[in-house]
Amino acid sequence: MNFLKKLPYLILIVLSTAISASELLTFQGSDGQSYLNWSSLVKKVEPIDNPFLTMSHTDLEMMKDYASLNRRVESNSSVFTEEDIRAYQSEMDSIAVELKASGLNPLELIEARNKIMEQQYHQITSPNPEVVDQTWKMLGFIAPIDFDGTKVTRFFLVPTAGACIHTPAPPPNQIIMVEFEQGIELKRLEDPIWVEGKLESEMVTGVASYYDGQSQVDAIYTMKADESQFYK
Image (cartoon, rainbow, N blue to C red):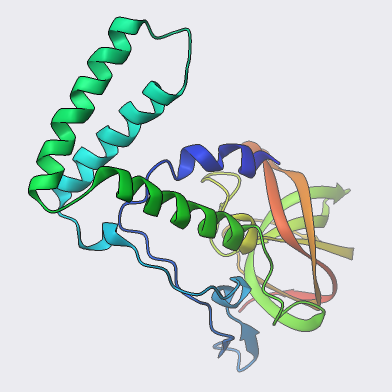
């Protein structure tokens, strides 16, 4: 999957991102209707200790450099000479001394980072079982996939306008691939729309495209919409 291939690069080092358990929330729109909150699509996880939250900016930057050097040293890549490896190890030793002066152990921090990354990976690629196989009304924006003439019949519903086209795609747990047989006359990506239907879980990939851009997108939710209208 496209997003999953990028994942190791997106979270090479965890700095100040906290993982929090989702709450099943709905909200009332200005039209008086009740909508499922996007945060409810996030699977609940048990909070784990995140030492990066209390680290200073300087220590975070040093740890980022240490992690980068450590990856090179452990890569066993022929790109790096023995002299390179010795130089990287020397830099790591110097950084470790400074971090330890702040009461930090870089090896323990790398282990903590790996645990956080593993939990993030699980969370963004797993559906929230509390919302699947139920009928919901969701409010969001269209990233078109398929057209029938001038009407969009299949699209990604995303929480922000222009996502997947003008800006990077959200994580898979914040995207719903929607099929709507009747089709929708889309005039602007910035127009909010609501869809209603049974929310199901399936890892899917599609190409979101519009006249000024396209991208391959991964999602873990699908919906065959029974009804859809632009939000007023």
